Length: 280
Image (cartoon, rainbow, N blue to C red; front, side):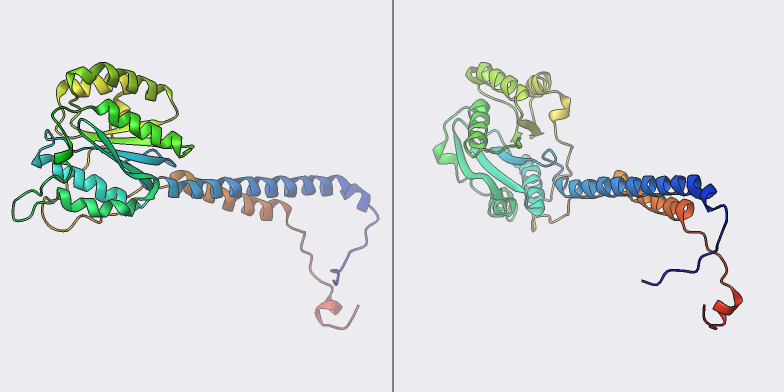
């Protein structure tokens, strides 16, 4: 590689300190740029995890759906909206339906698009609601604790490291289930499994029970209910503006600019004969 023109100097040694400072500045600026670039990369990877706002970021969830007779027609649009939004995100999920007993319909890790066939059961046709396909298997009474315990067992059985549960229910359980439900919620609160709740025309007592044991933050953000008729909504899940990622990207550019400004090589005009191409 051809080296640039040099200027002879009798006091070149006096520049050694400046050369060391310049080298340190270059290393510091380059190191800062690399660190910020790594941070921006990690932040960008985390953006994809936050697609499903109904479930905690980066978790594999189990949807626990109350299909008891107390879930009435006006609740169907909200159920349909939740299932459609999860299906649009296509994150891994499992599915449990319950009334007095609980059934596993989908194992954890199933692509959420497999929820789409269920949407027809929560869509009215000519103003008439569809028949509940699980009604014959259920007896009177609702046992939320059994459904939550089944979801918990599914996550542990399949060794899901970052599991979560999304409960869609009116939060009205049978009187004989209250003690078991309290114990189940308390155990889940202490476990690594996060629980989110979408209330469906809930009772006041049910809301107070879940708030007291899980906290108000366990309740998912309110959703605009989908239309009771027509095709299921396909609205994308919108994430907030990634301010952290943008800030890191700007800092990377500033670090690169500082590197060029503070540690660029000194540019000197070439001798006339070099400029004319006369040779060295």
